[in-house]
Length: 328
Image 1 (tube, one colour):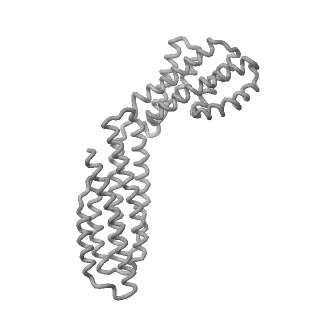
Image 2: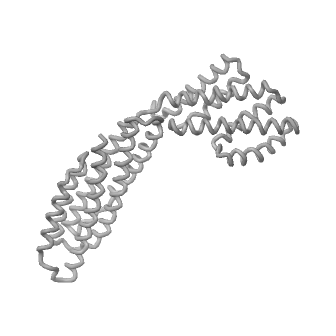
Image 3: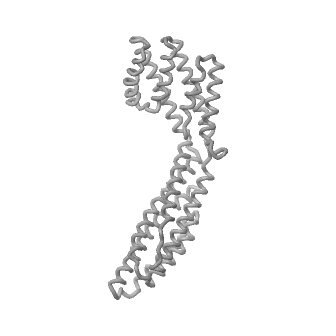
């Protein structure tokens, strides 16, 4: 954002539009403002999307010009012919998978209608405006796209911090069965993870060639999808914690695991510390006496299931964090 309300895309649109108008005027095209309008329609959010949509807009416009030439040449320049053009052209363009170019094709056809005559020079002028306007938009898109690396780093820090807070809350819940936790951190973590996925996907679409930058963007997606999967494990843990209505010694032992995990989750690589503690704890659990009451059995069963979810969580972290480390 610039000045708090003007985004990069708006600035690029302004540059592309002015550049297209000046270029069209310099080459002597009629109605150079049309090139500016076409440039506005051509600016997009990512490089890959820009190349795809500009191609679709250009081809759709050629199809529209061809159909309009037939209609205007056979029937003439009547207002109702424009309605007929829309009824015929829009479905054809959509069927050809050029849906993004429906508006652009309408602009050039309406130019032809506004001129009131069908000439090769007029059609060539519209094609020229298309090339200049859409070309200017493509050029601006290819020249500059914002670097999202700093934003992704910040989002990762925030996600890791939210996970750390979640595990602290789980630990506290295990130690005190009367403690009530609202779970706001899970909602915030999910929102941040989704934001990270969206930005990382956008950054990946801005890479046209296979480079180290593409690999880095792919690793960001690996990280955020890893957190997305782990949030499902956390939500399962919370359902199981609702069954822990007594604070038993086993609860305190598992709480120690989550204390350790609240630190491990903020590490960029898999440390294995929580996994080692979990393995030792399972040995301790096997040596403990069996539950003496039904209530104790239910609580200990729920705690054991929490451990199983924690194992799955760590399995995901071990696999994906190793992939992240190998890629760096």
